[in-house]
Length: 119
Image (cartoon, rainbow, N blue to C red; front, side, top):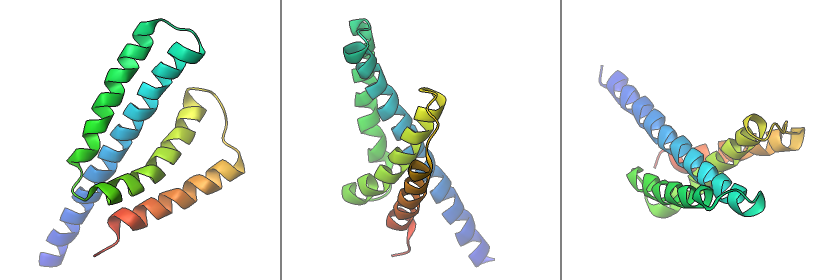
């Protein structure tokens, strides 16, 4: 019975931390995209200001993770890469090539090892 309880806690921890990583990635990519639109696509300055606020909020999200700064950001890097590929597919309508897919899988495996390996 105790083993099931530990497994339940592990699943909740993995889902909650992974969810925080995804939220952080969406905020960072979305905020950066708005700044990109402002500067590169000559959109209104409000795009840049809103993007800056979103990037500020993004900076808060990783502090909610239950690990140290270096480990959180190392693992987050892998999630960010995969989310950026997904963003490119959904928003930029750019289909990833096989090297982006292979690289995304590799960094996702690496991020999982960094953050979730038992210590």
